[in-house]
Length: 435
Ligand SMILES: Cc1ncc(COP(=O)(O)O)c(C=O)c1O
Image 1 (tube, rainbow, N blue to C red):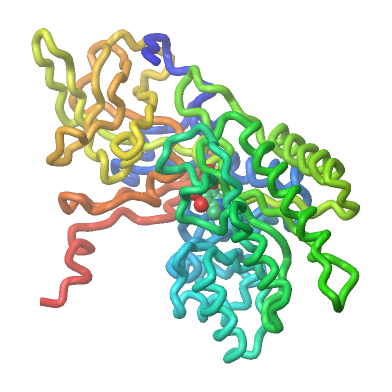
Image 2: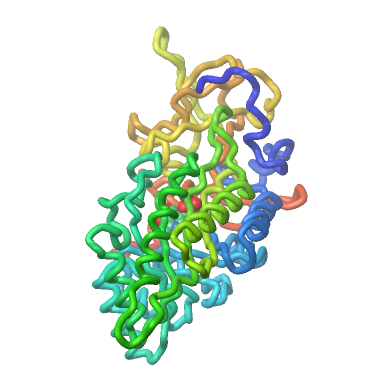
Protein backbone atom coordinates (compact mmCIF):
# COMPACT_ATOMS: atom_id res chain seq x y z
CA UNK A 1 0.00 0.00 0.00
CA UNK A 2 2.82 2.42 0.86
CA UNK A 3 4.08 3.86 -2.39
CA UNK A 4 6.82 6.48 -2.35
CA UNK A 5 7.07 6.73 -6.12
CA UNK A 6 5.30 9.65 -7.82
CA UNK A 7 1.58 9.06 -8.10
CA UNK A 8 0.82 6.55 -10.86
CA UNK A 9 -0.77 8.92 -13.43
CA UNK A 10 -3.11 6.14 -14.58
CA UNK A 11 -5.00 6.70 -11.29
CA UNK A 12 -6.09 10.02 -12.74
CA UNK A 13 -8.54 10.50 -15.61
CA UNK A 14 -6.78 11.89 -18.71
CA UNK A 15 -8.29 15.36 -18.33
CA UNK A 16 -6.95 15.75 -14.77
CA UNK A 17 -3.37 14.64 -15.38
CA UNK A 18 -2.14 18.11 -16.30
CA UNK A 19 -4.92 20.53 -15.48
CA UNK A 20 -4.60 23.96 -13.90
CA UNK A 21 -5.23 22.97 -10.28
CA UNK A 22 -4.13 26.36 -8.94
CA UNK A 23 -6.51 28.11 -11.35
CA UNK A 24 -9.44 25.90 -10.32
CA UNK A 25 -8.66 26.44 -6.62
CA UNK A 26 -8.39 30.19 -7.15
CA UNK A 27 -11.67 30.39 -9.05
CA UNK A 28 -13.80 27.92 -7.08
CA UNK A 29 -12.02 27.55 -3.73
CA UNK A 30 -11.25 24.37 -1.82
CA UNK A 31 -12.27 21.69 -1.11
CA UNK A 32 -13.71 21.07 -4.55
CA UNK A 33 -14.68 17.89 -6.34
CA UNK A 34 -13.19 18.15 -9.83
CA UNK A 35 -14.60 15.80 -12.48
CA UNK A 36 -13.19 15.07 -15.93
CA UNK A 37 -16.41 15.43 -17.90
CA UNK A 38 -14.95 13.88 -21.07
CA UNK A 39 -14.05 10.77 -19.10
CA UNK A 40 -17.52 10.64 -17.48
CA UNK A 41 -19.04 10.68 -20.95
CA UNK A 42 -16.56 8.13 -22.29
CA UNK A 43 -17.36 5.67 -19.48
CA UNK A 44 -21.13 6.10 -19.99
CA UNK A 45 -20.63 5.34 -23.68
CA UNK A 46 -18.48 2.29 -22.95
CA UNK A 47 -21.32 0.90 -20.83
CA UNK A 48 -23.90 1.74 -23.51
CA UNK A 49 -21.86 -0.03 -26.18
CA UNK A 50 -21.09 -3.02 -23.93
CA UNK A 51 -24.70 -3.74 -22.97
CA UNK A 52 -26.64 -2.21 -25.84
CA UNK A 53 -29.37 0.43 -26.01
CA UNK A 54 -31.65 0.98 -23.02
CA UNK A 55 -29.84 -1.64 -20.95
CA UNK A 56 -27.85 0.60 -18.60
CA UNK A 57 -29.20 2.79 -15.80
CA UNK A 58 -26.62 4.93 -14.02
CA UNK A 59 -27.00 4.53 -10.23
CA UNK A 60 -27.66 8.08 -9.05
CA UNK A 61 -26.66 7.30 -5.47
CA UNK A 62 -22.99 7.27 -6.48
CA UNK A 63 -23.14 10.97 -7.43
CA UNK A 64 -26.13 13.03 -8.49
CA UNK A 65 -26.70 16.64 -9.37
CA UNK A 66 -28.65 18.27 -12.19
CA UNK A 67 -25.66 18.36 -14.55
CA UNK A 68 -24.87 14.70 -13.91
CA UNK A 69 -28.47 13.57 -14.53
CA UNK A 70 -28.48 15.50 -17.81
CA UNK A 71 -25.09 14.14 -18.88
CA UNK A 72 -26.18 10.55 -18.27
CA UNK A 73 -29.36 10.85 -20.31
CA UNK A 74 -27.50 12.77 -22.99
CA UNK A 75 -25.14 9.80 -23.31
CA UNK A 76 -28.05 7.41 -23.79
CA UNK A 77 -28.29 5.86 -20.32
CA UNK A 78 -31.25 5.55 -17.98
CA UNK A 79 -31.12 6.67 -14.35
CA UNK A 80 -31.55 4.49 -11.26
CA UNK A 81 -33.03 6.34 -8.27
CA UNK A 82 -33.18 4.92 -4.76
CA UNK A 83 -35.44 7.49 -3.10
CA UNK A 84 -38.09 10.10 -3.79
CA UNK A 85 -35.36 12.73 -3.33
CA UNK A 86 -33.23 11.29 -6.12
CA UNK A 87 -36.36 10.97 -8.26
CA UNK A 88 -37.16 14.64 -7.62
CA UNK A 89 -33.66 15.76 -8.72
CA UNK A 90 -33.82 13.53 -11.82
CA UNK A 91 -37.24 14.84 -12.89
CA UNK A 92 -36.16 18.41 -12.16
CA UNK A 93 -33.17 17.87 -14.46
CA UNK A 94 -35.56 16.89 -17.23
CA UNK A 95 -34.96 13.13 -17.19
CA UNK A 96 -38.06 11.55 -18.76
CA UNK A 97 -39.94 9.33 -16.29
CA UNK A 98 -39.75 6.43 -18.72
CA UNK A 99 -35.95 6.45 -18.40
CA UNK A 100 -36.01 6.12 -14.60
CA UNK A 101 -35.79 2.96 -12.46
CA UNK A 102 -37.01 3.31 -8.87
CA UNK A 103 -35.51 1.25 -6.04
CA UNK A 104 -35.72 1.13 -2.30
CA UNK A 105 -36.40 -1.42 0.43
CA UNK A 106 -38.95 0.86 2.10
CA UNK A 107 -40.60 3.07 -0.49
CA UNK A 108 -43.28 5.23 1.04
CA UNK A 109 -46.73 5.76 -0.43
CA UNK A 110 -45.61 9.29 -1.39
CA UNK A 111 -42.53 7.96 -3.22
CA UNK A 112 -44.54 5.34 -5.08
CA UNK A 113 -47.20 7.91 -5.96
CA UNK A 114 -44.52 10.27 -7.32
CA UNK A 115 -43.13 7.39 -9.38
CA UNK A 116 -46.56 6.53 -10.80
CA UNK A 117 -47.30 10.18 -11.55
CA UNK A 118 -43.98 10.48 -13.39
CA UNK A 119 -44.59 7.24 -15.28
CA UNK A 120 -41.24 5.76 -14.24
CA UNK A 121 -40.02 3.01 -16.53
CA UNK A 122 -39.41 0.32 -13.89
CA UNK A 123 -40.27 -0.05 -10.21
CA UNK A 124 -38.09 -2.63 -8.47
CA UNK A 125 -40.29 -4.23 -5.81
CA UNK A 126 -38.56 -5.28 -2.64
CA UNK A 127 -41.15 -6.66 -0.17
CA UNK A 128 -44.70 -8.02 0.11
CA UNK A 129 -45.75 -4.87 1.99
CA UNK A 130 -44.61 -2.83 -0.99
CA UNK A 131 -46.52 -5.09 -3.35
CA UNK A 132 -49.72 -4.45 -1.36
CA UNK A 133 -49.05 -0.71 -1.41
CA UNK A 134 -48.19 -0.58 -5.10
CA UNK A 135 -51.19 -2.61 -6.21
CA UNK A 136 -53.54 -0.37 -4.21
CA UNK A 137 -51.97 2.78 -5.65
CA UNK A 138 -51.95 1.43 -9.20
CA UNK A 139 -55.69 0.71 -8.91
CA UNK A 140 -56.41 4.16 -7.53
CA UNK A 141 -54.34 5.82 -10.25
CA UNK A 142 -55.67 3.47 -12.95
CA UNK A 143 -52.16 2.70 -14.21
CA UNK A 144 -50.22 -0.50 -14.83
CA UNK A 145 -46.62 -0.02 -13.62
CA UNK A 146 -43.87 -2.20 -15.00
CA UNK A 147 -42.12 -4.09 -12.27
CA UNK A 148 -38.88 -5.96 -11.63
CA UNK A 149 -38.74 -8.27 -8.61
CA UNK A 150 -35.56 -7.91 -6.54
CA UNK A 151 -34.10 -11.29 -5.64
CA UNK A 152 -31.37 -11.92 -3.05
CA UNK A 153 -29.51 -14.85 -4.55
CA UNK A 154 -27.59 -15.85 -1.42
CA UNK A 155 -24.08 -15.23 -2.72
CA UNK A 156 -21.14 -13.48 -1.12
CA UNK A 157 -19.53 -10.74 -3.14
CA UNK A 158 -16.20 -10.57 -1.25
CA UNK A 159 -16.55 -6.91 -0.44
CA UNK A 160 -17.09 -4.90 2.76
CA UNK A 161 -20.06 -6.27 4.73
CA UNK A 162 -21.80 -2.86 4.73
CA UNK A 163 -21.96 -2.89 0.93
CA UNK A 164 -22.71 -6.58 0.45
CA UNK A 165 -26.37 -6.99 -0.44
CA UNK A 166 -26.80 -10.39 -2.08
CA UNK A 167 -26.63 -12.65 0.95
CA UNK A 168 -29.63 -14.34 2.56
CA UNK A 169 -29.36 -11.98 5.54
CA UNK A 170 -29.66 -8.83 3.40
CA UNK A 171 -32.46 -6.37 4.16
CA UNK A 172 -33.06 -6.07 0.41
CA UNK A 173 -35.26 -8.14 -1.86
CA UNK A 174 -36.87 -11.57 -1.72
CA UNK A 175 -34.76 -14.59 -0.83
CA UNK A 176 -34.50 -17.62 -3.06
CA UNK A 177 -34.80 -19.97 -0.09
CA UNK A 178 -38.21 -21.16 1.04
CA UNK A 179 -39.68 -20.08 -2.28
CA UNK A 180 -40.06 -16.46 -1.17
CA UNK A 181 -38.83 -14.94 -4.44
CA UNK A 182 -40.84 -17.48 -6.41
CA UNK A 183 -44.00 -16.49 -4.54
CA UNK A 184 -43.37 -12.77 -5.08
CA UNK A 185 -42.84 -13.22 -8.82
CA UNK A 186 -45.87 -15.47 -9.10
CA UNK A 187 -47.89 -12.79 -7.41
CA UNK A 188 -46.72 -10.01 -9.75
CA UNK A 189 -47.27 -12.24 -12.79
CA UNK A 190 -50.83 -12.91 -11.64
CA UNK A 191 -51.61 -9.30 -10.74
CA UNK A 192 -54.25 -7.47 -12.75
CA UNK A 193 -52.50 -4.11 -12.20
CA UNK A 194 -48.77 -4.86 -12.33
CA UNK A 195 -46.77 -5.84 -15.40
CA UNK A 196 -43.85 -8.19 -14.73
CA UNK A 197 -40.73 -7.33 -16.76
CA UNK A 198 -38.28 -9.61 -15.02
CA UNK A 199 -35.81 -10.07 -12.20
CA UNK A 200 -33.47 -7.71 -10.42
CA UNK A 201 -30.47 -8.52 -8.30
CA UNK A 202 -27.66 -6.42 -6.82
CA UNK A 203 -25.08 -8.39 -4.89
CA UNK A 204 -22.93 -5.54 -3.60
CA UNK A 205 -20.52 -2.78 -4.44
CA UNK A 206 -16.76 -2.45 -5.07
CA UNK A 207 -16.64 -6.03 -6.37
CA UNK A 208 -13.36 -7.08 -7.94
CA UNK A 209 -14.04 -10.79 -8.50
CA UNK A 210 -16.46 -11.32 -11.34
CA UNK A 211 -17.17 -14.93 -10.33
CA UNK A 212 -19.53 -13.61 -7.64
CA UNK A 213 -21.77 -12.28 -10.45
CA UNK A 214 -21.47 -15.65 -12.18
CA UNK A 215 -22.77 -17.52 -9.12
CA UNK A 216 -25.69 -15.10 -8.79
CA UNK A 217 -26.56 -15.57 -12.47
CA UNK A 218 -26.60 -19.37 -12.10
CA UNK A 219 -29.07 -19.12 -9.21
CA UNK A 220 -31.26 -16.69 -11.09
CA UNK A 221 -31.26 -19.01 -14.11
CA UNK A 222 -32.42 -21.85 -11.87
CA UNK A 223 -35.24 -19.62 -10.62
CA UNK A 224 -36.16 -18.64 -14.18
CA UNK A 225 -36.32 -22.34 -15.07
CA UNK A 226 -38.58 -23.05 -12.11
CA UNK A 227 -40.85 -20.20 -13.19
CA UNK A 228 -40.85 -21.44 -16.76
CA UNK A 229 -42.02 -24.89 -15.60
CA UNK A 230 -44.73 -23.39 -13.44
CA UNK A 231 -47.91 -24.05 -15.40
CA UNK A 232 -51.31 -23.52 -13.90
CA UNK A 233 -54.44 -25.22 -15.12
CA UNK A 234 -55.48 -22.28 -17.33
CA UNK A 235 -52.28 -21.79 -19.24
CA UNK A 236 -49.68 -23.92 -20.90
CA UNK A 237 -46.87 -21.41 -20.59
CA UNK A 238 -44.92 -20.58 -17.44
CA UNK A 239 -43.84 -17.21 -16.15
CA UNK A 240 -41.40 -15.67 -18.63
CA UNK A 241 -38.46 -13.50 -17.64
CA UNK A 242 -37.80 -10.86 -20.31
CA UNK A 243 -35.34 -8.71 -18.39
CA UNK A 244 -32.53 -9.59 -16.05
CA UNK A 245 -31.17 -6.54 -14.24
CA UNK A 246 -27.94 -7.48 -12.48
CA UNK A 247 -27.53 -4.21 -10.56
CA UNK A 248 -24.23 -2.42 -10.13
CA UNK A 249 -21.14 -3.40 -8.25
CA UNK A 250 -18.11 -3.30 -10.55
CA UNK A 251 -15.22 -2.04 -8.45
CA UNK A 252 -13.01 1.00 -9.00
CA UNK A 253 -9.25 1.34 -8.69
CA UNK A 254 -8.39 3.45 -5.63
CA UNK A 255 -4.75 2.51 -5.06
CA UNK A 256 -1.91 2.00 -7.51
CA UNK A 257 -1.82 -1.71 -6.61
CA UNK A 258 -5.56 -2.22 -7.22
CA UNK A 259 -6.54 -4.06 -10.36
CA UNK A 260 -8.14 -2.09 -13.21
CA UNK A 261 -11.56 -3.60 -13.94
CA UNK A 262 -12.67 -2.82 -17.43
CA UNK A 263 -16.24 -2.12 -18.40
CA UNK A 264 -16.14 -3.87 -21.78
CA UNK A 265 -14.75 -7.03 -20.20
CA UNK A 266 -17.44 -6.88 -17.51
CA UNK A 267 -20.15 -6.59 -20.18
CA UNK A 268 -18.81 -9.57 -22.14
CA UNK A 269 -18.49 -11.64 -18.96
CA UNK A 270 -22.08 -10.96 -17.85
CA UNK A 271 -23.61 -11.55 -21.26
CA UNK A 272 -21.68 -14.76 -21.75
CA UNK A 273 -22.48 -15.99 -18.24
CA UNK A 274 -26.19 -15.34 -18.67
CA UNK A 275 -26.22 -17.13 -22.01
CA UNK A 276 -24.40 -20.14 -20.56
CA UNK A 277 -26.60 -20.35 -17.47
CA UNK A 278 -29.84 -19.99 -19.47
CA UNK A 279 -28.72 -22.67 -21.95
CA UNK A 280 -27.74 -24.97 -19.07
CA UNK A 281 -31.29 -24.65 -17.74
CA UNK A 282 -32.63 -25.33 -21.26
CA UNK A 283 -34.45 -22.02 -21.39
CA UNK A 284 -35.18 -20.97 -24.97
CA UNK A 285 -35.63 -17.24 -24.55
CA UNK A 286 -32.58 -15.30 -23.36
CA UNK A 287 -33.45 -12.32 -21.14
CA UNK A 288 -32.18 -8.83 -21.90
CA UNK A 289 -29.18 -8.27 -19.63
CA UNK A 290 -29.32 -4.91 -17.89
CA UNK A 291 -27.10 -3.22 -15.30
CA UNK A 292 -27.03 -0.25 -12.94
CA UNK A 293 -23.44 0.89 -12.51
CA UNK A 294 -22.60 3.80 -10.25
CA UNK A 295 -19.09 3.66 -8.85
CA UNK A 296 -17.42 2.25 -11.98
CA UNK A 297 -18.67 5.22 -14.01
CA UNK A 298 -17.98 8.10 -11.65
CA UNK A 299 -15.32 7.06 -9.10
CA UNK A 300 -12.28 7.24 -11.41
CA UNK A 301 -13.41 10.50 -13.03
CA UNK A 302 -12.85 12.84 -10.07
CA UNK A 303 -10.35 14.07 -7.55
CA UNK A 304 -10.97 16.14 -4.45
CA UNK A 305 -8.83 19.23 -4.32
CA UNK A 306 -7.96 20.43 -0.80
CA UNK A 307 -5.63 23.01 0.66
CA UNK A 308 -3.17 22.12 3.41
CA UNK A 309 -3.78 24.11 6.61
CA UNK A 310 -1.34 22.59 9.12
CA UNK A 311 1.57 20.16 9.10
CA UNK A 312 2.15 18.67 12.54
CA UNK A 313 5.22 16.57 13.23
CA UNK A 314 4.98 14.48 16.41
CA UNK A 315 8.53 13.37 17.17
CA UNK A 316 8.91 9.61 17.28
CA UNK A 317 5.28 9.16 16.15
CA UNK A 318 4.58 10.65 12.76
CA UNK A 319 3.30 13.55 10.72
CA UNK A 320 -0.26 14.81 10.29
CA UNK A 321 -1.01 16.85 7.18
CA UNK A 322 -4.38 18.50 7.80
CA UNK A 323 -6.57 19.77 4.96
CA UNK A 324 -9.66 21.97 4.80
CA UNK A 325 -12.17 19.11 4.40
CA UNK A 326 -12.33 15.61 5.84
CA UNK A 327 -14.91 13.03 6.84
CA UNK A 328 -17.74 15.39 5.86
CA UNK A 329 -16.74 15.23 2.17
CA UNK A 330 -15.37 11.68 2.22
CA UNK A 331 -16.74 9.40 4.94
CA UNK A 332 -15.61 6.19 3.19
CA UNK A 333 -12.31 5.83 5.09
CA UNK A 334 -14.19 6.09 8.41
CA UNK A 335 -17.12 3.91 7.30
CA UNK A 336 -15.30 1.12 5.50
CA UNK A 337 -11.62 1.67 6.21
CA UNK A 338 -11.32 2.58 2.51
CA UNK A 339 -7.81 3.41 1.29
CA UNK A 340 -6.88 6.34 -0.97
CA UNK A 341 -3.73 7.84 -2.46
CA UNK A 342 -2.71 11.46 -1.90
CA UNK A 343 -0.54 13.76 -4.02
CA UNK A 344 0.29 17.37 -4.62
CA UNK A 345 -1.13 18.29 -8.05
CA UNK A 346 1.48 20.99 -8.55
CA UNK A 347 4.29 18.48 -7.86
CA UNK A 348 2.72 15.50 -9.61
CA UNK A 349 5.95 14.10 -11.02
CA UNK A 350 7.89 14.16 -7.76
CA UNK A 351 8.70 11.19 -5.52
CA UNK A 352 6.70 11.04 -2.30
CA UNK A 353 9.14 10.07 0.49
CA UNK A 354 7.19 11.69 3.34
CA UNK A 355 5.09 9.11 5.18
CA UNK A 356 2.20 10.85 6.87
CA UNK A 357 -1.52 10.76 7.65
CA UNK A 358 -3.74 13.13 5.72
CA UNK A 359 -6.47 14.21 8.11
CA UNK A 360 -9.43 16.55 8.01
CA UNK A 361 -10.55 19.46 10.16
CA UNK A 362 -13.33 17.71 12.12
CA UNK A 363 -13.43 17.23 15.87
CA UNK A 364 -12.83 13.48 15.63
CA UNK A 365 -9.57 11.58 15.95
CA UNK A 366 -11.04 9.20 13.36
CA UNK A 367 -11.31 12.00 10.80
CA UNK A 368 -8.65 10.50 8.56
CA UNK A 369 -8.72 10.77 4.77
CA UNK A 370 -5.56 8.79 4.00
CA UNK A 371 -4.02 6.88 6.90
CA UNK A 372 -0.85 5.77 5.07
CA UNK A 373 -0.20 8.66 2.73
CA UNK A 374 3.04 9.40 0.91
CA UNK A 375 3.72 12.99 -0.13
CA UNK A 376 6.64 14.93 -1.57
CA UNK A 377 9.15 16.21 0.99
CA UNK A 378 8.56 19.69 2.30
CA UNK A 379 4.77 19.71 1.96
CA UNK A 380 3.68 22.89 3.65
CA UNK A 381 0.83 25.15 4.62
CA UNK A 382 -0.95 26.55 1.57
CA UNK A 383 -0.08 23.66 -0.75
CA UNK A 384 -2.84 22.11 -2.83
CA UNK A 385 -3.33 18.42 -2.01
CA UNK A 386 -5.59 16.01 -3.87
CA UNK A 387 -7.00 12.52 -3.47
CA UNK A 388 -7.83 10.61 -6.67
CA UNK A 389 -10.84 8.33 -7.32
CA UNK A 390 -13.29 10.33 -5.23
CA UNK A 391 -16.06 10.59 -7.82
CA UNK A 392 -18.37 8.05 -6.17
CA UNK A 393 -20.01 8.08 -2.76
CA UNK A 394 -18.06 11.16 -1.71
CA UNK A 395 -20.20 14.17 -2.55
CA UNK A 396 -23.33 12.01 -2.31
CA UNK A 397 -22.47 10.96 1.26
CA UNK A 398 -21.21 14.41 2.27
CA UNK A 399 -22.58 15.94 5.45
CA UNK A 400 -22.48 19.19 7.40
CA UNK A 401 -20.84 17.57 10.41
CA UNK A 402 -19.32 20.26 12.63
CA UNK A 403 -21.26 22.69 10.43
CA UNK A 404 -18.64 22.36 7.76
CA UNK A 405 -20.10 23.53 4.45
CA UNK A 406 -20.27 21.12 1.54
CA UNK A 407 -17.68 21.54 -1.25
CA UNK A 408 -18.24 22.85 -4.75
CA UNK A 409 -18.37 20.48 -7.74
CA UNK A 410 -16.64 21.42 -10.99
CA UNK A 411 -16.77 19.62 -14.35
CA UNK A 412 -13.83 20.08 -16.73
CA UNK A 413 -14.52 19.53 -20.43
CA UNK A 414 -11.86 20.07 -23.10
CA UNK A 415 -9.78 21.80 -20.44
CA UNK A 416 -12.50 24.32 -19.49
CA UNK A 417 -13.91 24.18 -15.95
CA UNK A 418 -17.55 24.92 -15.15
CA UNK A 419 -19.25 25.01 -11.78
CA UNK A 420 -22.07 22.44 -11.55
CA UNK A 421 -22.77 22.61 -7.80
CA UNK A 422 -21.90 25.74 -5.88
CA UNK A 423 -20.12 25.58 -2.54
CA UNK A 424 -22.41 25.88 0.46
CA UNK A 425 -22.14 29.09 2.42
CA UNK A 426 -22.47 29.61 6.15
CA UNK A 427 -25.93 31.06 5.48
CA UNK A 428 -26.96 27.70 4.02
CA UNK A 429 -26.28 26.20 7.44
CA UNK A 430 -29.27 27.96 9.00
CA UNK A 431 -31.50 27.78 5.93
CA UNK A 432 -33.79 25.22 7.52
CA UNK A 433 -33.94 26.70 11.00
CA UNK A 434 -37.36 28.06 11.95
CA UNK A 435 -36.70 29.45 15.41
C1 LIG B 1 -29.78 -1.50 -6.27
C2 LIG B 1 -28.46 -0.90 -6.58
N1 LIG B 1 -28.13 -0.75 -7.87
C3 LIG B 1 -26.95 -0.20 -8.23
C4 LIG B 1 -26.04 0.22 -7.27
C5 LIG B 1 -24.76 0.83 -7.72
O1 LIG B 1 -23.68 0.09 -7.30
P1 LIG B 1 -22.20 0.51 -7.71
O2 LIG B 1 -22.03 1.94 -7.37
O3 LIG B 1 -21.34 -0.38 -6.90
O4 LIG B 1 -22.06 0.23 -9.17
C6 LIG B 1 -26.35 0.07 -5.91
C7 LIG B 1 -25.39 0.50 -4.89
O5 LIG B 1 -25.38 0.15 -3.77
C8 LIG B 1 -27.61 -0.50 -5.56
O6 LIG B 1 -27.95 -0.63 -4.28
